[in-house]
Length: 120
Figure 1: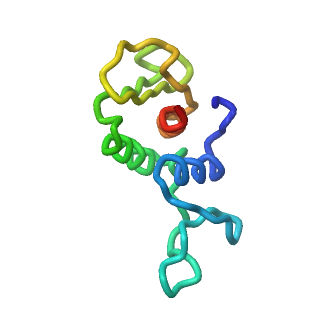
Figure 2 (figure 1 turned 45 degrees about the vertical axis):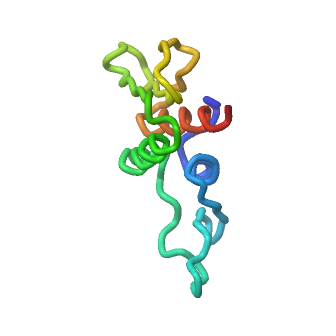
């Protein structure tokens, strides 16, 4: 999963697989389904993998969908590491490295961890 880089393709995966929003690629970007009576939605899907406020929407969504008991995000400064690490679990679990996904930023790590959790 680590080969998924931050950007619009990862954002589209998050929209579809985590947030449950179908997307289409139109006009060079990813869009949610059109509003009734309109050709396109007024905004493309959020920048989940690069914007912390959009990534936090993913966290909140995951917390309402059975992953409310365990979410962890470690910054590189805390662990003397080079990447952010995050994971979601359906219940409190012992934390080991195999449960984490690493990313180059907090939003990236959150997105990778969310994808890993929903694909299990």
